[in-house]
Length: 399
Ligand SMILES: *Cc1c(COP(=O)(O)O)cnc(C)c1O
Image 1 (cartoon, rainbow, N blue to C red):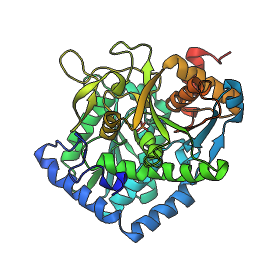
Image 2 (spheres, helix red, strand yellow):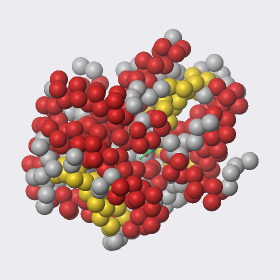
Image 3 (cartoon, rainbow, N blue to C red):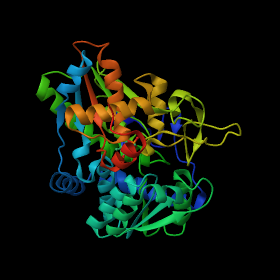
């Protein structure tokens, strides 16, 4: 059996990572979601409707672009980008949100709910809810609400209710806790649509499968463009959904080296980065086993990165597994490297990348010189319009 069919196992374990450690009242609801997903992922109607949505609403397939100017500038490997920035709403997240919305519709649910950090997942889910005529409830920390006002406006325009979360650090981790609490009392009629390849089973597998389209398209497009497979494939890793989407297309191609790029923030000191696999240890977070950044008491540590979408002290269990098996190499790029990549891609290619995606661009810039004659395919997970005010007000326009 191939890797994707056999991993995770039926309990949701990727090797020793993953699983579902749930409060008892939620156990039957997660079973219901698992059963529905397993049934619908084999249903011709479900698959046909999802294909239709991807083509006629999202604008897929997104292209692969040869970044010729950037390759010339770096001197070495040829750099290519899978353009998820051209997906509707400007990032890869809509791939799993539309599928989760479709799942909710087939399950007869009335509402989609989720946490959001910077608001990107909230906007993508609110878009799906509007498309399917479902209600939408988004939990967001008060600090993030103040920082990400345009995304709050977008969610409200799309018809979502934004629930401010005012306890603890008032950010992403508390938003997850708050959303779980609210979900317990309405799980009969609502679907909790987790925003990455994280959370209890079946979400890490389901979200990977919904993002698999990135890798399938990219493999075919790259072969058509160059006649070969890429030598190196890289993506930024927050929770890890855009990376799993791209990697899953190449996971059986043993000659293709896969790289996950974590945010190194301002330094390797705890609290100043969010490079979970690079510096973390085995642990539990939000109902699953994975690698976690922990503080002195063993609780999830505070994290920092210039890219708020990568701001999570855990990581999807499949990444922990692929790190353990050695199939994927994990490395990190700092805020400074990501900003340099942000300016370079804008100036030399005419593409303003999301700060998250800029971490993958930074990896390509760093590695290109050392790999002449090779090819590097990166995932451009999203566009950077959301980041331009922050970047230019804080750091200027680059040299
Ligand atoms: C949310 C986000 C990410 C990080 O999420 P993953 O699950 O790690 O992919 C990366 N890029 C963009 C543009 C995002 O919005």
